[in-house]
Length: 360
Image (tube, rainbow, N blue to C red; front, side, top):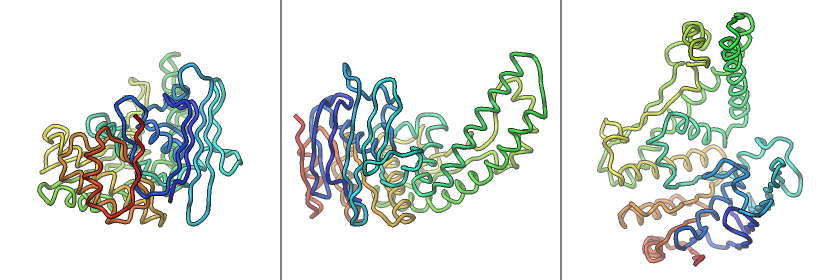
């Protein structure tokens, strides 16, 4: 997987930029606010059809403009693929592959395997369970289209059941038969989601631990625990047992949409007891394990985006992270940072060719 060309028009604060990439490591250096993270985000956008930092598509259009366009040329298994993503105000986003528009945007997910590591990843530790579920779904979804379709169907059914519960409350009525239709659908859809998440975590956790040990030089023990309501019972029983609660809350209180991950360091929550450096190392190991998992499944090196990740890591861990990336034969890396010297020192530990784009 190799990005050869990238062009941006009216994307966030970038009016027009063109880049050609020949090196396996590409570094965007510049002051805060100059747009280096936006360049990385545009690459993410081409892979996932949305921004990593701002999911509101309209807000990714440069202020005062009425559209944005991103275009990338990728080399995938000796074949070139041109991906175009554009949006005009008031219209739907358009994703094209080699000039042909996708019927369903979800059909594009997985074509460009990609892993991003960013300061925004700290939300995985400090935010609620939905952020961690999105991480699980993002990894599995890049490698399993059936999982992605089942998840979309489940979320639609969940929204319909919640709307019905709210309707019952507003109109002071209740129809069990109508609710049972959605209960049955959620039961059918939740089981494969749960099984695939559980199977994924069983493979992923050992990979993650190995990555953390490599970065931290075995100085701390870490673990991840997967929690799901379906570990206790099947979906039908859960919905039946919590019916009265759901009627009061006006939404579905149990199911795979409540799954969560518990991140631990030395057997305590890293959210409460981990230092900033430990949390950052944890997140980097998490994302590198994501890379390993995707590569194992699709047999393609995902593109890696490292967005300003070295700010709170000591130089030794910075160099160690870069060394790990190249020792694992990662195909192409894009780095953004404010400190050119710091990046050069880190890259001195690898013999790989690199190019620096100074956006200042």
